[in-house]
Structures are given as C-alpha cells and as structure tokens.
Length: 115
Image (cartoon, rainbow, N blue to C red; front, side, top):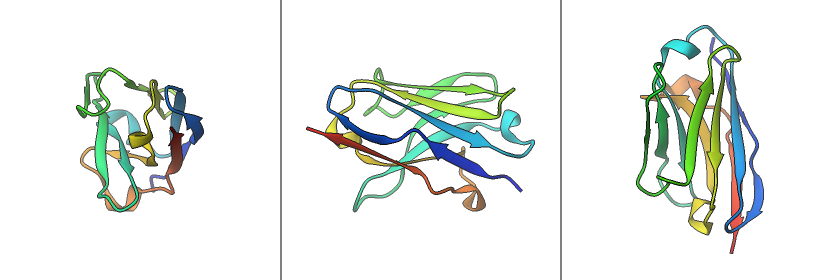
C-alpha cells in the first residue's frame, strides 16, 4: 500500500517562496514518474510539474521558470520549490504518480498567496 503525505504549504505574500515535500511509503517511488498537481477553488485538478525516474523534468507553462521539482529516491521524498509566487498559484497541492493513481491521492497541502 502506497501512501503519499504532502507538507510545506502555508500563507505567503506574492513574490515569496515555499518548498513543498511529499513523503512516500512503499517501494514503487523510485521507479515511477512523479508529479505535483494542484486544484484551485472551482477549478479542475491540474498537473504542474513532472519528474521521471531518470530525473528529467517538465512543467506547465504557468509555472515554468518559477517552480522546480526534484526527488530524493533514497528518502522516498518528492519536492517542489516554488519561487515568485502569484495569487493565481493559490490552490491545494498534491503529489502522485504520472499518470495519477486514484488510491494514491493524499490530503494535499494548502498554498495561499496574498496580493
């Protein structure tokens, strides 16, 4: 059974930074492409960053140049460094495999960016 636990969210002013973490249990972490997703109020959940097992990354246009995804396979932990935050980045952030597995969704971590 894989469990993903997100942390690191909070309230920050526009232009600020946050670093999210995702702690994963289970042995599948290192062999899967992993991603950070977010869901803003009234909107569908969207994928914002992907990192493959070999380390290559991809980003949604809306976060490119501001967010950096990374992983530590030895610690089974996924990270998202978020810089130059904007009010539009306000959302609940989740980690999951790419493509996502329904049973892996955790509680997420709330990120609120004030203007």
